[in-house]
Image (tube, rainbow, N blue to C red; front, side, top):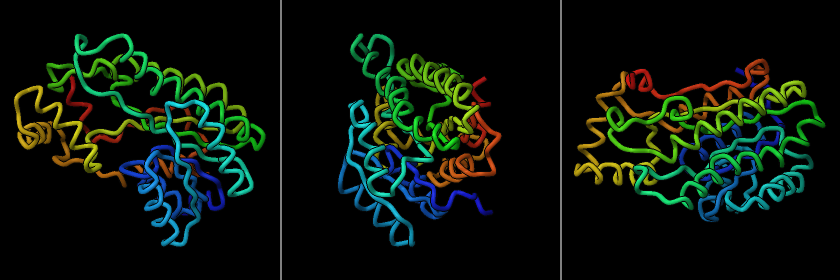
Length: 270
């Protein structure tokens, strides 16, 4: 399927590893000129090389998403490299850690809100003006299933108070922005992944969750696997494929949506 986005400039935060890297590479394969944003230069260099090795175009920007001044710089770097501001913008925030209410202080709530909500707001402020001018744009956030369905200790087996508090706020912001940008031909959608095997970061997160329950990582993951109807964990490419479609010309009438990719796991929460 021709997605109709060859030549579009795509800005991907968190684009050097896991889901973000898969999205960067998928957009590159579909002809996008990709601006890969992350902190670690080594991972950035590896991702840019992978895209170029497949015949794509890509540049990197090293930036901290908690530094709001970095967002206008990302856009400026995209324009410098490819002659125009981003047509496609993917926001993958720094996810909050797991933990119960008593584990966190006010500053922890503030940091999580800054990363998940205010970071996205500043990201949109940076990319939307150019999209409005072109009257075309695609914005996709990599969200969380807890934006609509709070994680419950009795079902998910670990507490996630920061995500339960801030993910719904980010989803509400995304839905509002979708309404406001729709008249300009700009779509805004959220993809909440389920259990996606992204390597070391994925393992580190669930090792903490397992330790809180007195389980080994293997015991914890074996138990969670039984709760997924498809009886396996997802891959980054299964998220990037959905993301690429939402960025396409074919998805021009899809906006303000929350498209869960989790192997049916969310349904088992009830």
